[in-house]
Image (tube, rainbow, N blue to C red):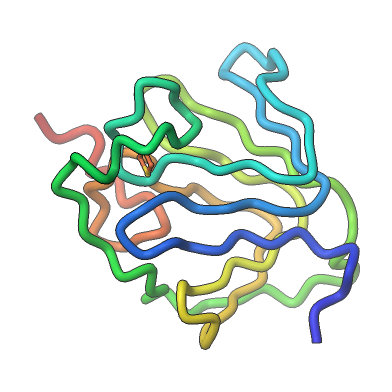
Length: 136
Ligand code: FES
């Protein structure tokens, strides 16, 4: 059973990732873009309101079932606390803080305290970044 203070990122099929918990999103300069209990972040790379989903995935040819293939997990001493998400310019989202990432069907969950998440839609290891954003 999930801790109610837990940060959770849920992948949406063919769409964004929904972050719930104590969420702060900052840009590469550290300016706060959002501080809230919920953030819908683009995974397709087509949003005009990056890093947030604006619904453009519906027109984009973005297909991802929202599975998690990298099944490594961290053992965290404390799964509560804020989650900081840093938007790297023209690159990934860096997560810092305890978070449970769960597949769209809810069957797989992985706990992390740091990591890089794809927001260009091209990673072969979604939801994680595999540096595919560097490809032309
Ligand atoms: S996932 Fe919604 S605009 Fe990219």
